[in-house]
Length: 273
Image 1 (spheres, rainbow, N blue to C red):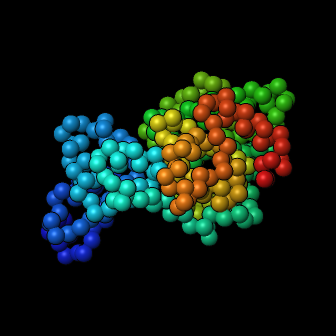
Image 2: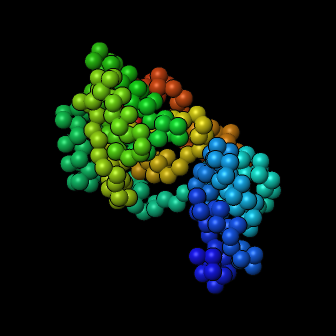
Image 3: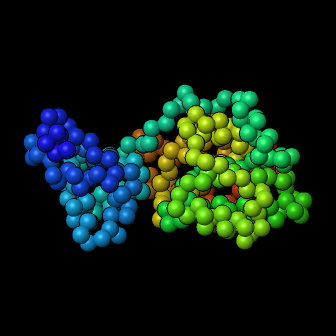
C-alpha cells in the first residue's frame, strides 16, 4: 500500500487509517479526514495511541467532520492553519422538503397501527457515543402522558444498528413500551430520506461527550422535520462561518427530550414551523 501511494501526488486517510501516514514516503503529502477518532484518541491503548498522534501531526492538513474535536486537534499541537471544518456531505436533492411518497405513506400506515404520530431515530446504538437510551426513556415518558390522555398516541421507529442495540431493545421491554417501538434494518440513503418524511419528529444522539452534529441533523432538517437532540453550540463557534448550528430542539436529559415531544405533539403548527 505504501509503495502504491508513492505514485500519487496526495493521499487521503480517513478515520482509523491515520496511522498509515507515518508509513508513507516522505515525499508524499497526505490529508487526514477525521470522523471522530480524535475524540477518543486519548483512550486508545498505549501501543496504538502514539502512532495515531504521529499520523495527525504529520498530515499536511486535517479535516474535522465533528466540530467538538477541535480542542483535541489543538492539544496535539496542530495550529489553526493546519485543520479546518469539513461538514459531512448531504445530498440536498435527495434530502429535501418533499411530499410523502406512496412508500413513505405505506410505511407510516404499517408502523402506526392507528396511532397519529410517528417518531424516528436512525441513530446508531453506541451508548457511550450516542446515548440512545435517552431517546427510549423520553419516549417512555411520552407514552405515559399518552396513557393519561394529555398527548396523542405515537410510535417510535429505531434502527437495528450498533453494538448496544440488544441492550436498547431490553430497555424498551423493561420500560413497557416494546409494543410501541418498531425496529427496522439499516437503510440505504434513498430509504432513509423516505423514512424521515414518513416521520413527524426525528431524534438523534444525546451523549454529553459528543457536542457535535452529524449527517442525521442536517438530513432531518433538510426534510423539514423537527429534530430533538443534544449538541453544544459553543463547540461550533470556531466554524460557524462554514455551517451554522442547526435549529434543533436541544435536550440533555430524557425529561427535557420528552417535554419537546409533548410540545410538538400538541401543536401541529409548531411541528410544521
